[in-house]
Length: 126
Image (cartoon, rainbow, N blue to C red; front, side, top):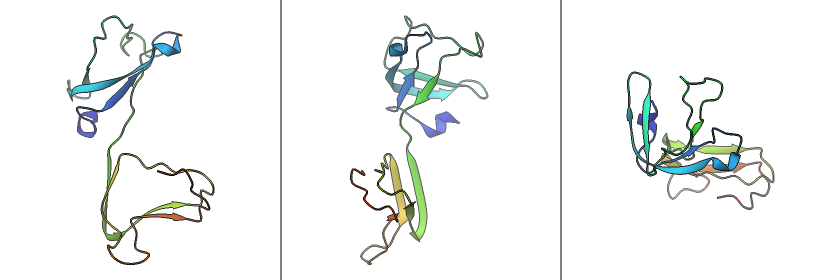
């Protein structure tokens, strides 16, 4: 469930429920918990009482969209594993919020946890 994937401090974007797109805004999650069988209750560090939030029960077609802006990912290898970015020539690559465990071989040439293969220039990559 979402409660297992995200937690306090995550950033959530609540899109506008109107045609005014600038009403969408990012908020910081202060609490996240299960509310019923499949529902998740997200609490943010702001008063949302003045924002027109439309629930799915009110309108399945026009319900307010809520999306998490960050995702914490852990990739665990066997010790000789690696993450490969393949055939993306001249395209900056951004890996953010990823934690690698047991990847590559320390102190050995060509045994790296992240490999850019056939990528050409990766200037601007983070």
